[in-house]
Length: 81
Ligand SMILES: [Zn+2]
Image (tube, rainbow, N blue to C red; front, side):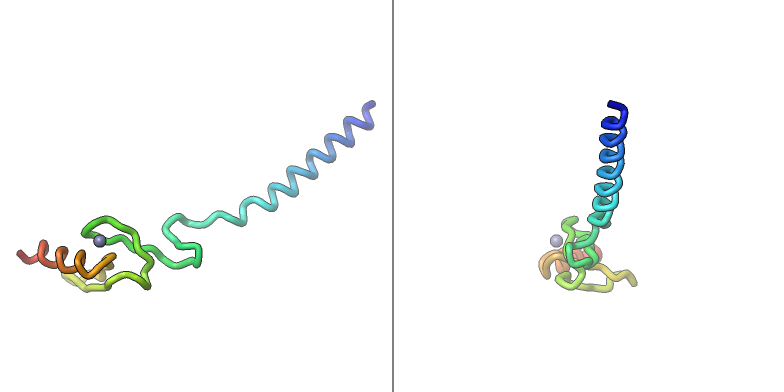
């Protein structure tokens, strides 16, 4: 009876070890796309876009990224009315 219990325990420990090794690999930071690309925030509308798809602009010495040309234009307009 004790032997059976020990076998069960050993099996359980082995199982938790195996599933513990399998699990952590999938975690990644939330601001990255599945390809590992950096997401940037559009300061005008707050949308996150992949850096390579974003419209880049340097405004007041800062590199900014926009989801569309429209947002870029409207943001620039809001900066210098
Ligand atoms: Zn936008």
